[in-house]
Image (cartoon, rainbow, N blue to C red; front, side, top):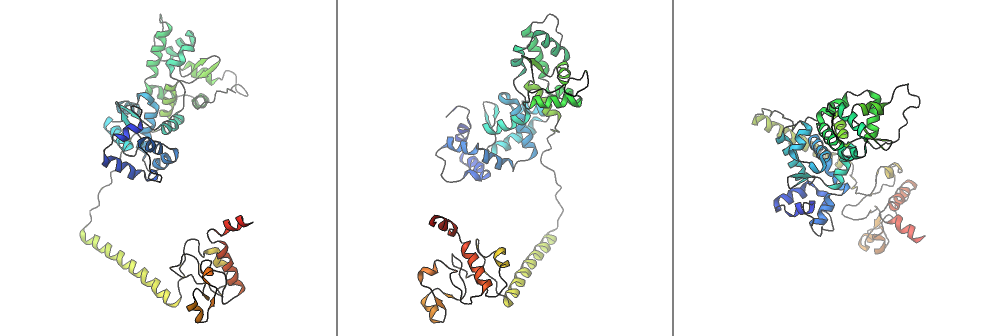
Length: 383
């Protein structure tokens, strides 16, 4: 078991915590039973299970989770709080909720996410490599231009020093987000293209002279040119993600408790009971004049009822696994009473004969028999 892995985290949970986690993730409680914590971690980290779990989390959980994905290996509670501009305790509470649902865990002070979940949220944020990695392949003059755009004094600085200063400038995510938010529309569109991996540059076809969003982004210190291609640093992509969202954590809504007197509650409960009794008695009164058919799953539905005009009505006998038709004897004792007896084998294959044989009722019986579970498959195999 890998150190700091999800499986190791699950193995370290006490019984009560693990039971609560599985209660919140019922889809993983399926046969076959997981062989161990590694197998359980794989189930909890599966895409289908993650999608099901994310449907039940709130907005704050998604915001904090995406912030953790943006921080990647540097994801801590304090770092996510700084990135979102939120109180550290609020972020800590959200991380605890994610951990309770098996969507995050702590390992050596770092908050980790299931691999597929981290990949999904990182893809939504976009961006590529860190600026310190990109800058190694960028000419010194381009680095000076980018650093100067962020107010860095570049006189006398060598390339390693320029890279360090530029990385420090882009680390102020909130300030970078403000610059991104103030970009003109063409530059913002181009930044989003680079952010989500579109390296193809068709700018210039049909554009006005002097317009080039790539140059505008470079002059703002937001992109760098590497081997004749523009590349967006990861730090700028995270800032662009911040700029397009309202990331304020709202916390659980604070609803005031209504002042309800015990007498009011009792009256409401009594009214609900009376309404339930009224509904039941209404059904029983109607059943006194018209019998109620016992419809089961796979039985007579709206389509079958539309095909019958009401004559030659078919009764569904409760208590039988298959459909049964009135007028057909299912035992010799019933045959003695004047009904048609078709033998034991017919009792397992109902809707074969109807005593009152009319055209509408026969069509209805054929439809019931054709829709019987397993019938179509046997017919196909017998061809």
